[in-house]
Length: 88
Image (tube, rainbow, N blue to C red; front, side):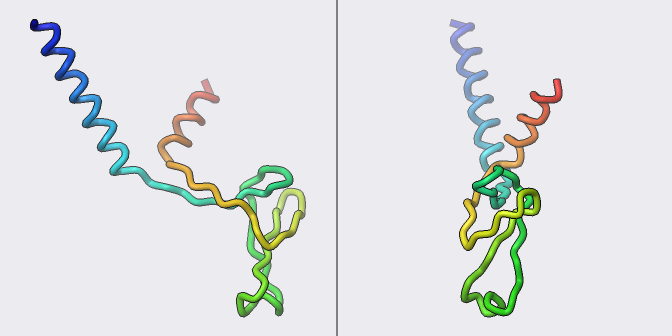
């Protein structure tokens, strides 16, 4: 009986912790190059796209240019956990 109560309390703490992490989640949005998968993408400003007619993006790594690049939304905490796992 005591073990079951202890398990329930442990589960409740774990659920609260997960809920707090979700509330405190900081989401980062970044553009990725479809050619080389690099996140080093910048917007190009020329006379045609100053007024927003044809926004152009350019990858700084492979020099790929296009009007549309995929946008990725990632939680910062998950990124940091993956970096820590890779470094170990």
